[in-house]
Image 1 (spheres, rainbow, N blue to C red):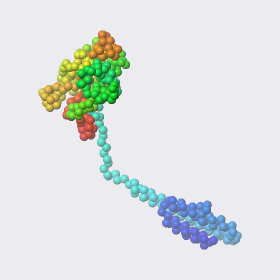
Image 2: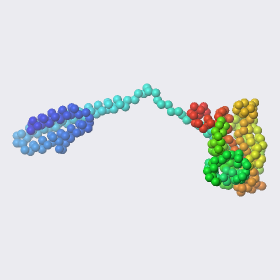
Image 3: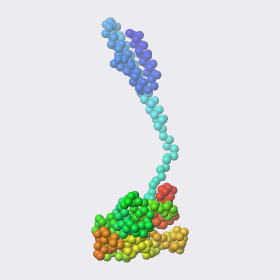
Image 4: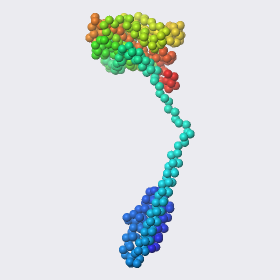
Length: 339
Ligand code: DAH
């Protein structure tokens, strides 16, 4: 038995010396000191020894046990230290390596121009409303005094989604939705995307943006329209910009005007941007047609109103001196960083 104990001790110490991981040490512990371990089995045989032998062997067995336990403990902490050192080496961070720079986003010039417009108009007492981009023929045309066979439909090449559904060609549709829901006094703007089947070039895009405006109350006149739009133009382009109202035609306004501003590039002398004209058109407007008011249940004998539709893309490119509308839709960060 003595030999057996010595042998176990030698074997276990050797195994402990060679164990490379905490797991391996755990296995050794189970193999020798566990309930069914080799040392434990020997101890169970003690009962068969003579009374003289028993204390000697008992003492020896205890010595072996505590030798193994302390060897295991030492080995365990050595392995732990080694594992920690290996992990630290693996996770070492080189703080001198250059970081990855993430480009910082900016407000798109269309958004910042719209924010400016919203600030100007809310300052004048307008509220901002929204309308759907998929519209019915009724809201986009019919109720705006543009019946099915009206030649004015040719002015706007429409994307139809079915017999009566279409992608709105103008934010003017919001006028009708607003007048159907609100009683005068009404003072709203409605910004949003509009769609027309146009080919893409420097000044055209099949998707672009308008900001509709509508004011309905008792005693609203063309003077109110002029004054309101002049305030807007001067805030966007600067106080020295001239504003010109040209007679025009829209089915939903009578009389109708188009509004030009003196060219922000050349100040009116004539240049490439204004194509030599000295003026740039930025919106259509007019006094709301009595038939449109009546169709929405507003008595044109009592109320009058004005409306306008600002070309937001035009306003953005000309006020920022951007030469090509396509730049607004490409989202090239080198372009956007300039604003
Ligand atoms: N909807 C017109 C267009 O897209 C612009 C316009 C003109 C809007 C006159 C109006 C208006 O509200 O009164 O060309």
